[in-house]
Image 1: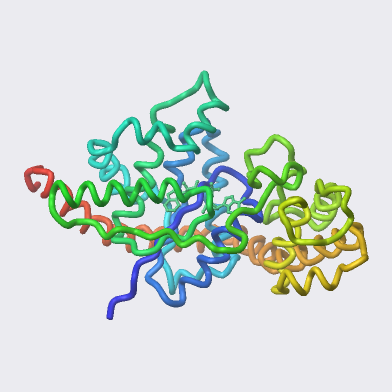
Image 2: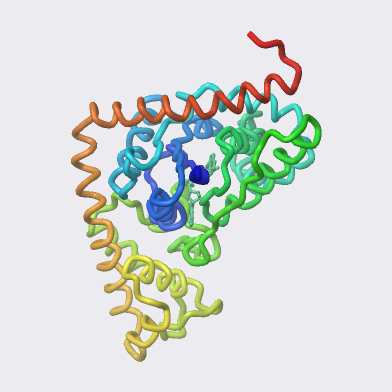
Length: 330
Ligand code: AMP
Ligand code: TRP
């Protein structure tokens, strides 16, 4: 039997956080064993906000190296760069023709990002979710592992697939989101009501996968907590709850075990230990990352082969779509 398809993507917009790692990349690694996985570096998505070209190139390779360093194996899954497979843009155009302005206008990520860049509100930011739908639908994807923040975009992808299928006959598989119960939303260390994001102005609010041990210690020490003083998992103590989630993911210990371990010990000791667990969890990834970045030829080989495989699968779907909408075969 053919393996089911998994697709996901990460933007190369500089410095991935442990939120990206926990919410997305860590799960990618588990899924590659069982499914036919496509993991993309979505550079086309990245230019919806202004980018410096040389940084975009560097960040794109950086995400690839982080994928590999985290344990993604190009023998088991397809790793590629979005702009290397033309069909993503081509399908986007067709899907744009069945996308309603009203629905795109309701996307929370668009609303948030457009508030931030009012003078530079570009059309690509508006159709961003349509490109994301094209990414997913091209591969006849069954499952899409993402963090909680992407749920609404997934819903749109499902709507577009259904709409197309109804209008032109069965073409796309309807994808399902795969959202972890745990760690789907890692919060800002400075304001635990917001998600941890690399675009935050305050550097202390996030930990990067590539942060050095001292930086990690400092950021966790400064993490906002509360005056209750007990390591307990609840919604009155969002900062502590978030640190417990992080601790649990990196150590493998359950929340109960963590609560018991820190009973009566206060936040100082707890924070020190969170930092150490994160540091030792990231150390092997950072080591492999450094080695990989020294081997650009290898990275090039991986993304070239990935694009070839992805292209093959994507073109099959695109050809069908072009035929169904009435384009004459070339
Ligand atoms: P992005 O950096 O926006 O391309 O996100 C890449 C992946 O990481 C997506 O699946 C996001 O849902 C996920 N992600 C980003 N930030 C977080 C976070 N703070 N907690 C959990 N998942 C996240
Ligand atoms: N929009 C996603 C994010 O910001 C990234 C992304 C682009 C994606 N295309 C995708 C995720 C397809 C899953 C599937 O996180």
